Image 1 (tube, rainbow over the protein chains, first blue to last red):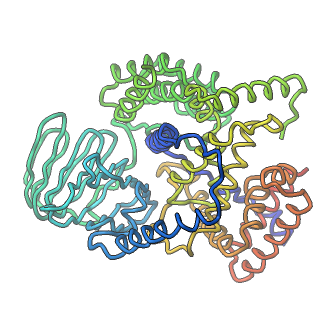
Image 2: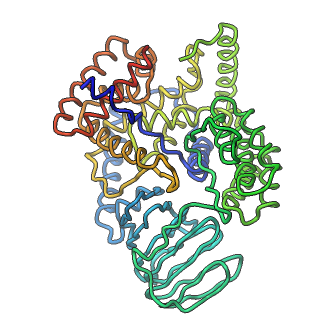
Image 3: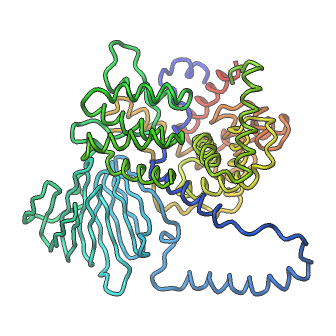
Length: 327
Length: 208
């Protein structure tokens, strides 16, 4: 075995830590501070007696049993719904997810977040790639909404596909009706219709199938991948490309965030997709470091320069949070 | 772990204690600073112990709430990063103890850029990691935590001992037992066997 070890050049290291998206971190942070804000009053001075615990435990156990029973027997409940929000990301193969009364087929190289909308309905955030949805009619049920960048698809009960590449999105309806909201404009699509965020509504020649859902890589319009916190590799050849400069700055974040910030800002002074990514990354890093004024300035600058950039939606979310935190 | 000059270590410990004290007094800016500073370390600890996990956001939330609720007990004997990682370790431990056998209807997989020239290698690592965590699912929680922190995450036995509240000898024994158990399971799984060998080599490299 030791000979084999010595002759194998392609040793596998520890599994890479999967990066969490900014939105996931935002959810965690919001939930933690909401919990702290709603923390219980100071601890009681006197410890309750064992008998008091028994008296208290009886109704609590009964209530817990009733809730558990209700969760099990209620007609529209499912374990997946209770586990939300969940992120689903696919590799080379599609995967099928049962989520409440919907069946979601996630295309290869796609990622989406299953969550709750403010009106207690279902909100699916399509990060990238595509997915097909088969949803029961919504009459009497909570709303079912798919968000792909700035495009929102509201479902009335249907079978349809949504795909996303950067901030561009397209929708195809196989059965039923959906309402698409993009930049304030509403469009109702019926079976056989297709829609894309370029503004053209066209009759679809064919409905979407699992294989037909675009498996678009997560790239901006100009072809640069959107910001990802994954560990980049820094090649040792010169001169460094914009991507290599960006990767080098990302690699510095953990050890020397100030230097990383400087590098991002320097790269952002240029033009092109990596300047856009660097400017967003600088804003995100400043926000992470609680430098809220700087974060606001950088994120505003990003939205001004790249209003349709691949990270525009995340930049707006962060900017809102920076503004909330600053007040 | 790189050696830290005594003066720098003292400054760091003092800054950590100051931040912890401000968090403990309810200073929201300090709490956010702590969140930003340690979030990657906490995430990494949970991920190393549990692997790809659909409950990761809930576990992060649970970890941070536990951190803020016990921050008044921070004495600066270890760095804030290590102290917070210890709490994440306890959260992961409790999760392993309480969770039911995995039904795993969803396949949560790490993302790989399609134009990554290293994609094939990353896929191989992913498959190997999947098998490793499937095997870890079947061994004792204490052994799993010790193995994950020492072998997968590459921490020293002393650090793992500090994080898990055990002696170094106990940690060493747990890692040894976990390795034996994994090797036993790997007899019928060449991918897992090769991966365990790679991890052992990497650990030897760390120890040298």
